[in-house]
Image (cartoon, rainbow, N blue to C red; front, side, top):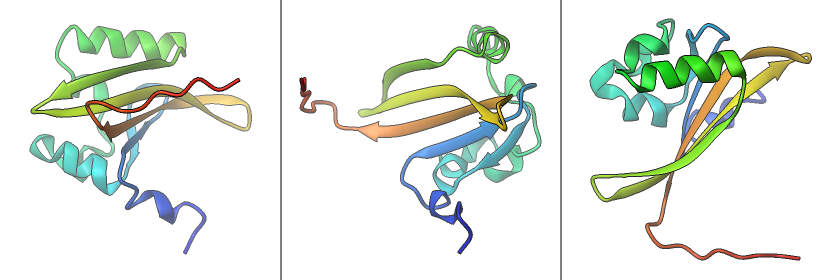
Length: 113
């Protein structure tokens, strides 16, 4: 097992792109999530082409500003946390990672001191 094999079957969708938006990697959950759009065949394509407006402009802005974007969505009764963040390699901006994690509609929230 290589050091990153654990992510392949991790139960959150993980998609990685380069600074221009070209999809570099997807795990199984991401390929399943985007199966109707091509699943693993999306690797090598630009994710900007996969988004309609206004999401395309928002995504392009994130790639250029290098600011993270975090929010929740609910679709078909499934609530997800979407975490989009720049990633770096040897201190150099390398693109974005999106993690989409299914979460309960109602869940505990703890404030710790």
